[in-house]
Length: 141
Image (cartoon, rainbow, N blue to C red; front, side, top):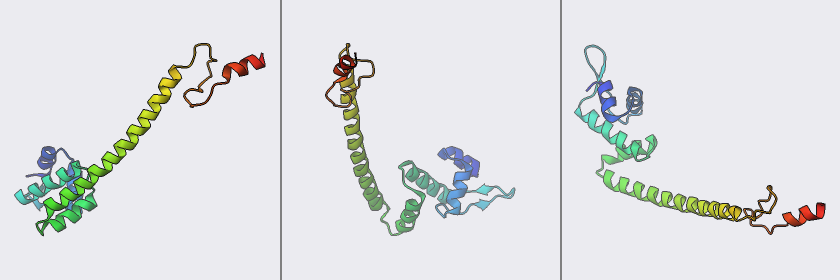
């Protein structure tokens, strides 16, 4: 398969495939008579693997290690371990972000509950502070 065809099939650019070839993630392409890169079936399978692993968020370095280690028949086990760890990390990040969102939502709702007679600059409720804005306005007047 020509590099352009393979790239289109996989949804990547020819430049990406050349990078994967340069980093030894996929076998070097043979050259057709016209000088174009031509990938055999093994290279196509490897390219599908690499693109699929990249779609899961794995780095080129990690994929390189996996491919080298994969020759020992441990690819599935290693991928399961990496994905399990990534799921744990994402769950933690989501929990942290959910906490931030809950906090912002509470402050937003508190801001909406500011009395209408409060000065326009009063954001005390959003800051979780006791409001003295009306007292400050009266004292200044």
